[in-house]
Length: 181
Image 1: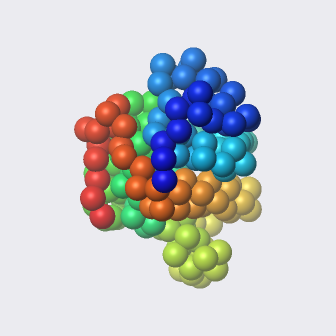
Image 2: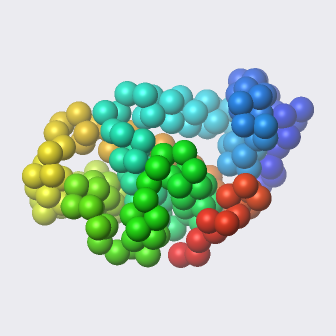
């Protein structure tokens, strides 16, 4: 698959890419790949926006969900990108990030329960284990958060799958966080 530049994209992908460039100074390769079909880029950016604003999770918790799913799915692009976001924008500690990337228990019990639940939702295709669900609820999460995890799993599934199929190269801005499965 081809990475599309702004001038090659159809609306509404073209407008979404222009808006992203004005905010970030560049268009990430993920968006260039998703622009091959405007419905994918629009669906992803809308899911991301509502996940960020309405999921009931802190920015750190959001990155734990997104990284857990990307790691489970083996998406080298998304692990690099969300590691960058986790460290540079969401104040996720290095020990949490390192544990996530190494697929080890997290040093924070609540975040560990969140990570394991998100991974279980993805792995079990919407039928998380009783153990993961119980630990998640015992950690203080409720029904709002269960639905929020489903949103995160859905958006990461879209991005992980297009990255796998398109072999999306990691952007230079995320290079220091490259990850191999």
